[in-house]
Image (cartoon, rainbow, N blue to C red):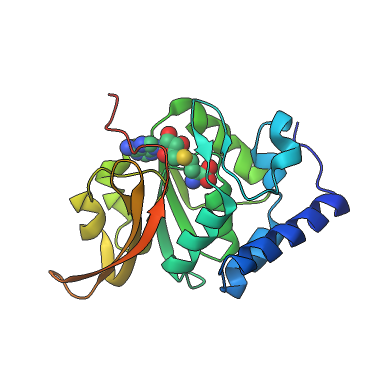
Amino acid sequence: MIGKDTLKHAGKRKQLVAVLEEKGIKDAQVLLAIAKIPRHLFVDSSFEDHAYQDKAFPIAADQTISQPYTVAFQSELLQVNSGDAVLEVGTGSGYQTAVLCTLGAKVYSIERQQELFKKTTLFLPKLGYRPKHLSFGDGYKGLPEYAPYAAIIVTAGAPFVPKPLLSQLAIGGRLVIPVGKDPQIMTLFVRKSDTEFEKHEFGEFRFVPLLENKN
Ligand code: SAH
């Protein structure tokens, strides 16, 4: 059973969008996506009342749904155009996946927790979100089958930048990845050529760790 989306929820989303704008998010498409997506349906019903506060929350398997500001900040840095192939590492609740789908991306996403992978694979289509491919596996390796990607987003804290992710970027492609232990530095890599990458850093964020494969 999925819950309902009501006018009251839509009103709360509008307030959340205003908070994000105040914190500096400018991308109109990203703000529109957040205004549309029923975030309260992505969190456990006991957290429903808090779903539209700018906070991170626990989901299954000791993981978190990223804070809306973080989702918006990363999505803005990705500069997604409709039709772009985008890879997400860390599907989790599927909320960021839904944002990418709403931006018109062809979304590929990887999750290493089986429980979350299964749950989110069933859940997203129920809300009408249709990522191209959800994969159960190790995000450190990326998803070479569908490369190159116009953009890659990592939604867990990476102790280092995995090489396969850089090599799966198209020329001109953008990798947005929080790098470090605690906290992480939000980092953008733009691929300039086969061998050259431009690097930009955007301050501190806190994520659950990108874990090495269990298998
Ligand atoms: N985008 C998610 C954020 C979830 S938190 C959301 O909006 O809800 C980060 C997620 O990354 C967790 O679900 C965690 O299980 C997953 N993760 C951690 N290490 C991983 C790895 N090596 N490969 C793929 N997913 C990983």
